[in-house]
Length: 263
Image 1 (cartoon, rainbow, N blue to C red):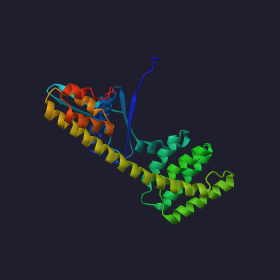
Image 2: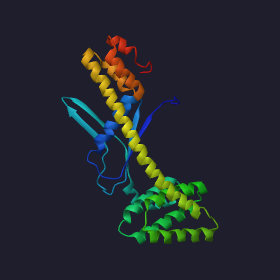
Image 3: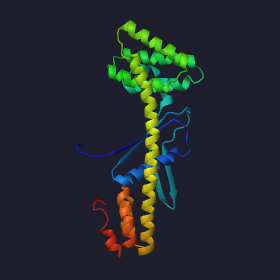
């Protein structure tokens, strides 16, 4: 109706069948709503190989109480029957879906994968994408459709010949080396960042639990709002300060005064 609204989009890309997937969609949805108090749209892209696996809801009922979620899903396997549509589409995600499907179909044949990899890369030029778009999509295809070194070299030679014949040198050998190194470095950086974030979150959770434990021992029940405020704090320095106050405060009211105003 023209009004500005803030919505949260929760997107899951699932490439393996998982019996707990629908429940996880439900859990993530209500956690996001609980944290932000805004409407949440949960959507799923299923990239697995099982045509009959299509989870789109989770629900349970107990004593007249019904709880659950129903969410839209896109099954990438369905696009095998819509291949002509993908070929005609100018949407860059059509190329991504094509690369995904051909990666699944060519697991048993490296030679066939090389042919399709070259076919898909050639289409990037034929669709008239800008050079930067070609490079971005090429990175994805190159990462997804991995080949043995010998076939990889043959593929790269075919790409160079095609570019020379059509006078459109988009992907130079220097850029290709850079793409490979960038992917490798990105993976390593992602692992390191994940470890660091995990350790940090573990420390925050440990200190937060200590604060809550001290408060419960010293001041007993009636801590609902206080515990909720502590649960929203993600700064470990603030939590350590609150831990000291929980140990030394003469009353719960004195401790509450130490809570950050934004909490």
